[in-house]
Image 1 (cartoon, one colour):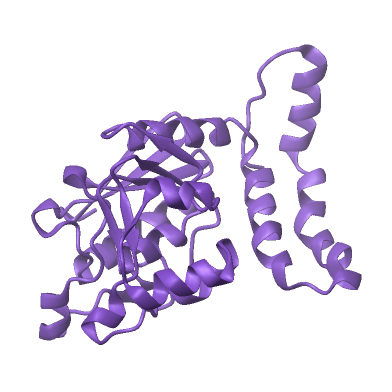
Image 2: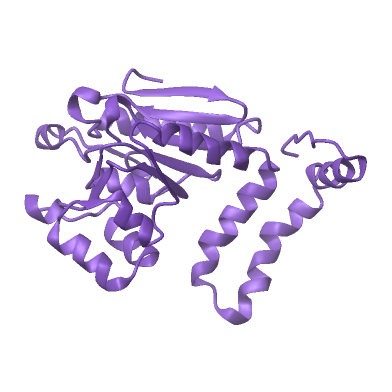
Length: 254
């Protein structure tokens, strides 16, 4: 990885850190490419079951690097979109650990994650209209699917900052931590997830995401090709054997 994106691994969990604290972790081209490279590499490794995305220096991400934008350094990766993530989230579960600001593209990166852990001091917002821009990295599409319509409209149209406590009330934030503890809270969730079978996790995430638009009369038909291979996997046999033998399963991702 580049200096702008750091990756650490432990116990089946990879932590991906945006490392531009002096710029409040604003996303430039290097960050976007670094995140995309990390996800491409980690998605191919069966021993890694879950990810945490966070920012260095007490801030999650202040959005797109506007100075880079003016100079033509676009924070977009072909096939993955803004931040190397927004248009193509990873197959494996991704948890956001939010301290400080998650604004504009930073909020959109958090919305690209499957779970969100935030400190009591974290603030979220889509201030793009204040800069003559639009939250085009998924913010105005994902937000009204996660929280009530009128609240999503307020957040998107005012450009105001909203505390983590408010988004927790709305169900957008999974857990609230004390300041400085968001990463540990996110790691706790990610470790619980990574204790489960990798193929089952990937299939579960895929069905949850894709089934939102499935017609009711086709839901089980469409689910079948995704989940049936899991039932025939070596991990499924291992899970049953481990239960019968009263031991922890040893997953292979096969």
